[in-house]
Each structure stands twice: as C-alpha cells, then as structure tokens.
Image 1 (cartoon, rainbow, N blue to C red):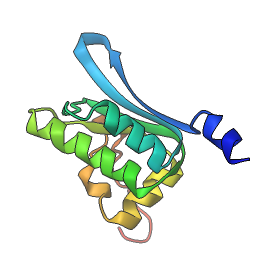
Image 2 (spheres, helix red, strand yellow):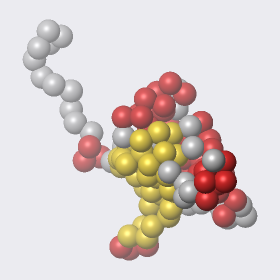
Image 3 (cartoon, rainbow, N blue to C red):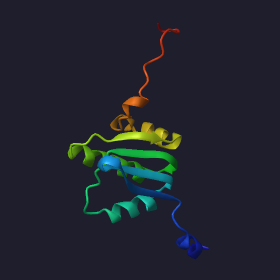
Image 4 (cartoon, rainbow, N blue to C red):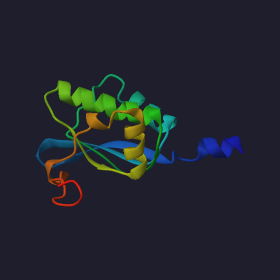
Length: 123
C-alpha cells in the first residue's frame, strides 16, 4: 500500500507561469501539503522566486508550509521592487491566512476592492 502511495502523483501543484508583458504568476492548485511545498522549494532552492501575482483560487487544502512559501515569494518580490497581489484565494486559503494572522501581508488587486456598503444599520 505504501508503494502505491509513493508512486501516485502529488495531489497539488505549485508552478510559476508567465503572462504577457513579463508578468510572473505563482499558481497553487489542489492540496498544497508539505510534500508539494517542499518539492517546489527544492526546485527553486537558489533562486529567489519573484512574482507579480499569486493565484490560489483552486487550492482545496493548504498547510503551513504552503503558507510559508507564499509569504517567502511575496517578500522576495517586494524586495525586488514588485508589489505582488493575491488575485485569487479559495476559502481554505483565506481561512488559513486569517488563522495564521498573515492575511494583511497579501494585498488584493484594486479591481477586487469594493467600497463598504452605504446605508444600513451603521450609517
């Protein structure tokens, strides 16, 4: 049984994809567990991963290693003079970021920021 598990592909993936005008996007998909995060980190061990956006909208599970990797990429990008945005995040990612207290470290794109609702009980 353990042999079968070792032969199965990982349940999640982390890739860097290039979009127009030299934009780099860190894509996280599926179950981003420690094995998936470690595989990505080992592949980029000597390179600082600099991106313009992070897309975690298709993540079904994320562990602390996945969150740490997202944070390291965001910090490396900021140090390189870029302002990476979290352009998509699934509910599991949003919840994990909030529980870890690091959701504010991931700005969202301007077009996704909506003004607070007018009227209602508060004003």
